[in-house]
Structure formats: structure tokens, C-alpha cells
Image (cartoon, rainbow, N blue to C red; front, side, top):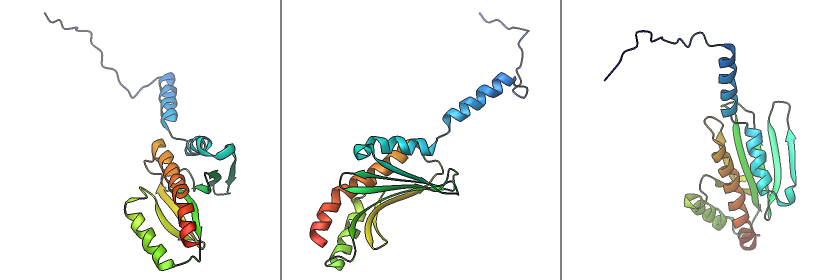
Length: 166
């Protein structure tokens, strides 16, 4: 048996009440990622002795430094728009090094499958492990993974690379 209700009303969303608007804004705010908070949460779980150096520049960028195992890990956030970026790096070997051609070959081979979303690079006369990504559609899980991957790979390889090439 079916019934029809002749008094069905169509509700317009064009005239939301002020409480509905506030609720929608709160939901929107709650789903917005605070990149700074996410980064600080990840770092707090990884930093040895909970020691973290934090800096902020005049353009809204942030930079953190913390020790993980035997490496210093750096995290830089250039801002909080989709065009800004997250970069994580850690030095593993100072240059110059012994037998640099062999070192470069080894690093390129490791870049193939051993470094996940990060890679080895040269910065300021140092071999580093680095990962960088724009903030567009960046999730909290990706923030955590970038920091964890760089810190872990750098800590896993720094001693062996220094023993072989220093």
C-alpha cells in the first residue's frame, strides 16, 4: 500500500539559517588540514629527546630541525597555499668523498627502487636524502610518510656510506 502526501514541501538550500551556515563553516574548518600542526605531530613522535628547532620567516614559511638516529632531519614548509611546498631532507655524507664515480653510481642505483618517494641528491657539498611535494591535495598521511621515509632512509644509509666513502 502506498500513500501520497499532498503536503510535501520542497526545501530550498538558498536560504540557510545562520546556524546552518555556521555549522557548515565549522565542518569545513574541521576538514581543513593544518600543515604546521600535522608536521609538528609527526616530528614530536620521531625526534630524539623531543628536541626540535623551529623557525619561521617573514613570508609565512616554517622550518624544523630534529635528530633521528644518527642524522639531522630538516623539514621546510614554504607556506600554506596549494602552490607552496613541503621539503624534507637529511645529509648522509659530506663531499668530497673517496671514489666519487663509484659513489655516484651506487646512489643512482639506489635511487631506482631503494628510496621510495625520496631520492639522493647533492646540496651544499653534501649527499642528502630529499623529498619534496606541493601542498595541492596533500594529505596528513603523505606528510607523515615524507618525513618518515627521508629520516629512515638517511639513518639507514649514512653510516654505511660514510664507512665506504669517507
